[in-house]
Length: 257
Image (cartoon, rainbow, N blue to C red; front, top):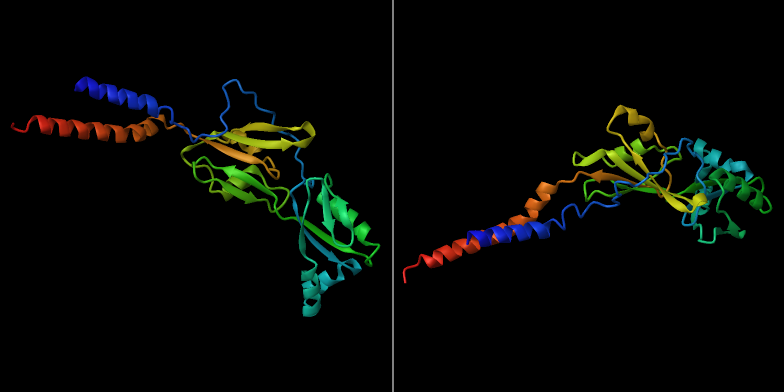
């Protein structure tokens, strides 16, 4: 019986080891070569397919905006401005279907360039057009290392840093590795995704924390490998079943015939 118990526990440990740390994502081999962290920060967002554009158009150099801000424009101006605030999608072909203009190629332009370009096009139909353009769905995906705390963080401006994003999701948990933060970024001009390894466990890593994140970045904080705890969790039900079976067997053998 003792040998059977040892055998069962050994088998359960072997099988449970297959599931240990199975929740860890985006593993890299020991000889994996990470890309160099960019030293030049790109502060200008470039439009790409899938962007949702918040589009506001005013005439007369945006006079209605000043009226509303000063409170002298009245409800009529406010309603007209609200009516011209609509979202438009940048299609996979890089074009946006806009009122009056139809399909306009927008991909590859910065927000400022897109605003100037559209103001020029709308000048044929409006007197001194004033245009406001914002990206509504600029976001990054953050896996904070807790195993169940992934979040999508919307970028409010073009200068949000890695530290700011981590602060928004509650920081780095005690079960995560501050020295193993992977930032995965699509680089269109290189036609690939680059992977940067960032170490925030020491003060020397502060400049890396000041890295400005870009839309669609993936930030993955690697969790600690709690091997002993996970094995124990996996084999506890097996041990419970075995001990219950042994107790039942001993009870049966001791019943007087």
